[in-house]
Image (cartoon, rainbow, N blue to C red; front, side, top):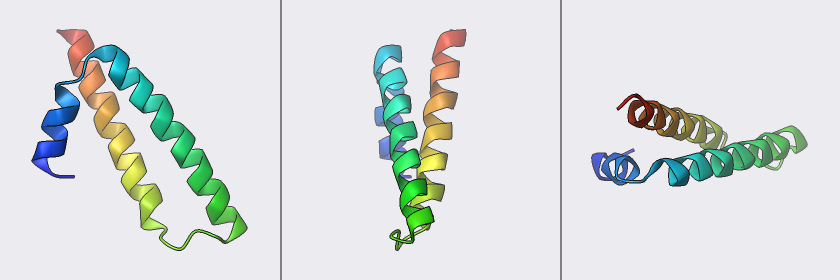
Length: 66
């Protein structure tokens, strides 16, 4: 993930971040189901989504502490 994308995430408010977390979780569930069914070609997508989820959660925690 590029620095520009990280800065865009940091500029969002807490409600948007919570919404984004739930969206990413749904996408992860779909990707895992596709993997189990053997339809997922690029398994790296799961890893990227997990990284993105962790990043958003970290930024949300930082905002809550302020």
